Figure 1 (cartoon, rainbow, N blue to C red):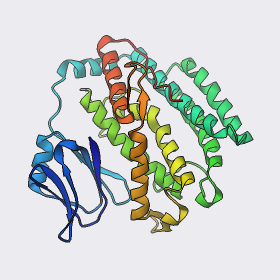
Figure 2 (cartoon, helix red, strand yellow):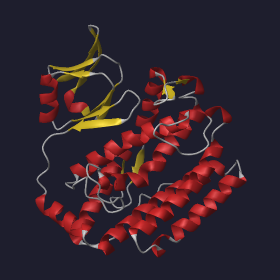
Figure 3 (spheres, one colour):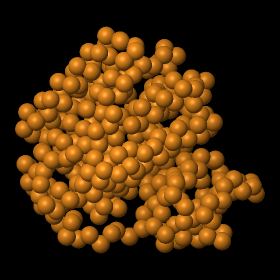
Length: 332
């Protein structure tokens, strides 16, 4: 199965003969068997017929609504999975600071190790001293994660290490990308536009994985509870953020997206990605999401999207057993 992205403004989604159709100005842009669609991601002003809504809900296909520039607006989902015992255990674990800390430590260690690996991979031939320094800082940070005895201290530790990571990552982009640091709301340069978009897409996959595992996406451990924030989905996302960083680096350096795909915009959206550039980036993103990885627990090769679901299931298993910790993917 695969997601369907709809970016054509003014398009309409409908259902005909169990096929999801995307139409615009009387022309059919896409006709996909509903059974082969994993989810629908809509950018901006796109219509959705009532029969299409009903069919997608009946088949359990989520619909994600994003603004035209990729900011999350909402999600259409079916009924909750009936995993009451698991969710009751999840809420109890939220009151267990030792369990939450050990789970959070595992997630942060996995994320920092993946960031370090990404920089090492791209600096082998380059030998950039600033990147080398960031690699050393991340190695030290991974080794001292367990010394943080509160989630707040762990969050600060992760934030400082990630700042060093982005200091190294920026050295891998040419001057034409104008990438100096990680910034958002709004993203000030093309690389930050792509990073924000990629994180949004991946966070929706994480949320779907958490829900599919039977967990409450709002009840997290690394990210504290805040009303209407899917904290557990964000917990799951952290380990996989460097995947997006790698996609952005690959797309920018490999020519899938060029600096000419971006134009100046209004103050609330100072850098605008063209439709053509968006299509090419989504293609690159999906190629990486379909890349097979060996899951460390299942010991099976599976697409990255499935690996994320297995990591959510790992969390569910630990919630039920009360065994803290978290085994990362060990990306290489």
